[in-house]
Amino acid sequence: MNAKLSLALIALVGVGVFALPSTMALFSGQHSFYNIDATGNQIPCQKCHGDVKAELNSGLSTVTGTKGPHADFQCEYCHRSEAGMASGDNAIVKLTYANVTGPAAVTSVYVATTIQNYETGNFPKQITGVGAATKTISDWSVFSAKNLDLTTFVEKTDYRDDRGFYAGQITAQSAGILYNFSRVSETATFSNGAPLDQNTSTQNNAVDPSAVTISGTGSFNFNGSGSREVTPGTRYHAASLVSCMECHGGEQEKGVAGYEIGSAEPYMHSGWLIDPTNPNSGCQNCHYSTSSHTPAFEHALEAGGFGLTKFAGDTGSVEAHNAFVKTNDGINRFGYGASNGACIACHTHVAVDINFQKGYKLSFSATESSAGQYSVGNFAVEGNVNIAVYGNGSGQTFATGNKTYSWTPGTNLYINGSGAKVVGLGTAGTSSSDSATALTTGQ
Image (cartoon, rainbow, N blue to C red; front, top):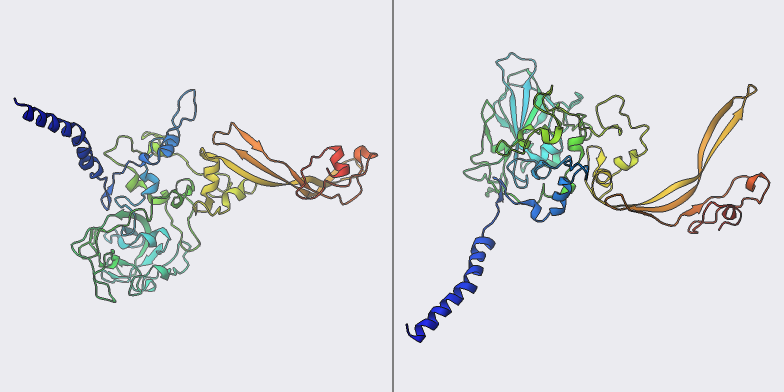
């Protein structure tokens, strides 16, 4: 082998060693994409959210290694509620209304509508059949639509389509028969052609629920109703869009008056939480029970004590933390009557920094009767103590700031009954204590 050929071979090997791996990585790694579209999400969320994954897997006990209550959850349990959809923008909801007054031969009624209508409760809970053929819903009043409390259903017009109709389609009904809302399911869209915008006659890429064809058995045909177009991240990628009370609110009626989602099955979840191809998916992941339990897998998950559940004794009237839970923090989602911030602050590894304002002094009257018994009343809190308190994620480290007192006695008070006159605790912004010196000098 001559010298020139040898050098050429060495150069070729060198190019292969240094260039080919990066080239292969470019095409096999940087140009291989995880899918996120109307057929599902294959992105391993823990690539970016390793801290969340670690927290979910954290044990309740460092000694026994007991798994945390959400250890076996998949991300889509909370963040991709519409099964099979990447965002929910173009998902379709199928509402089922069960026949409650007619003969058994009269089947249920089905409505195709938008995710937005369902999630805002913008659908009636009771309708009366008028014998209409399958058609677009232009006016709910023709169906004698009612809320759960049987008041007249008033549609939220913000979610109407471009013709001013309710965004939905309803199957034929039997005249005069009463139907109650009984179930909802979500389905990904499929179409052989996008519909035309009713006003501009141009192609519309969004799904038009009124163009969905529904059979008498409730099967949907999406031909001509719209595309599979989605906008990733716009609906279910953020934790702020998930309320803890969606799972922990119990079976109470949810939402604002007139738009409740009534169901004996909280959040109507059975159709999308169970993945038969995943051995780690099952009722036991949430309910900590077994199939032999009666009822199967049932275990109460309600956040009791705050008046959020169906139980008569759960009024929240004696709960000191009621305001923490029921105040919208403006940061996390405030859904179903409770703040995510309160749940996160107590139940996750998130540090909490609170600026407390507490009462300085408890005042009350004690009146003695002729029999030597006391009647106690007129309880009041006087003065303020401001203090900042900080606790880290584990709760094993905490810190407190300087206390700021503000209180002026309403009557003359004397230290130990006959000592120096109490003149107060200074003014707001003055760091002090409640020692005898402070009571007399305000320092």
